[in-house]
Length: 232
Image 1 (cartoon, rainbow, N blue to C red):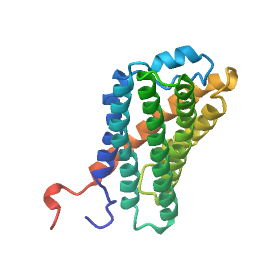
Image 2: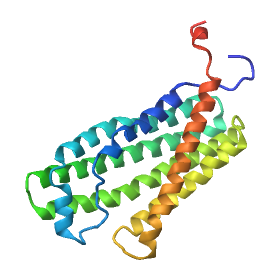
Image 3: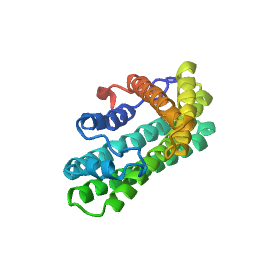
């Protein structure tokens, strides 16, 4: 590495692409949980019937893809490892992202379990309960994601190693994702204004998070030492 040249890595982009590979299968799988929280028991149970295999496959694939989020934040932490002022923020960011992945894996497991129960004609009450838990856990997934993105972006701003706009984009996205997660969880069982605000307060902020993650990954990729220089 040249003196004064910021560190880079290819692993951040690898993590981002691994995470986004979940979209290779999500568009082709039934959209569950239902977000009804038991308000229409017959339609909820029927929504899961015949989808056990595909929901189980989705859970397995996405569980692997989700690890890309942890890889991305870990790579960012590695790049800034020599800047002591950022280490607490980045340690927190890695931990928060790991928590988000763990919660989302549990959420996927609950929805897949509901799919198997629905396919075998088991207790309707069990399917409804798993569907409701999957709905609530989705909102809870967003809160640690937002906290991780916010902490990572603040570390980027403190480090002065990234363009200011990129750090602020992540900070704003992270804060909005936190708010969206809280609103989504709060209004999950409601039919009023809070429930209706969940979609716009999660969809747009999550899209901003993806843009920030990819932009940061590309910056770090371009800064990485050429492969021919590795080992010299």
